[in-house]
Length: 271
Image (cartoon, rainbow, N blue to C red; front, side):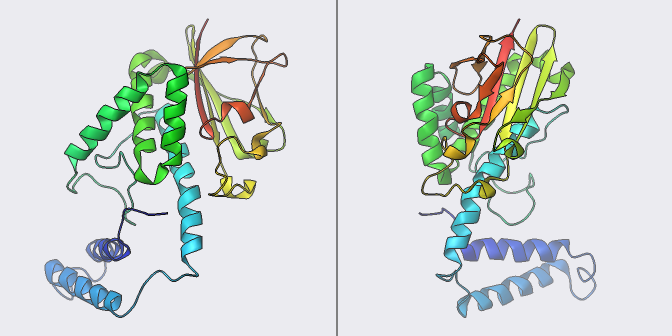
């Protein structure tokens, strides 16, 4: 699997960031510009002497990256649906693999993002079946970061369409039951006759899923259900895919079916 970043480049950014943020030595031993040049030179020399990803480390790195993408998407969903005002940094619409905190000062390739944004809008306009297929394709191609952009667009569009719910809606935790209940957090927000249900997977590595099998409807979710205090047969809409979701006879939703194509779900309903 290919990753579109350079180890050397990431380490140089990290070293430079640490040098600039040093509150003890910066500006006392040498001017910040001189110190940063010295740190960059030393890091480059170390890299030239053979600091590389070894064969033993690469499998671990790929495992962390695979599960890290789900943590990133889960965090994004939680940030954009929880009570409060979310903050977004420009340039982080895709994966931000810099080993340092994001900020708004770095140059951003807006032309590339505009192109991908046009594609994301086209996917968002597809009918449910075609949109689900497109989301599955994005999930399979997760290293390119388009899946994060698609989720960002979908959630910001949802916030725009339901401003009262996101600014004044209440918050109610939801219960789950089943073998993977500890691996999910869920809540409901409601204002007037509008409601939002959010379910987010967590602790993915412990589920035993692998990058080969993925987390696309894994057996680990089977038998785990989200309990709702609504009548059986109540319907809601999948805000990401647009499909119709029906509550079962036990007033529950099966996560094995709901977490498709990702272990996250956002549902909307109106009384």
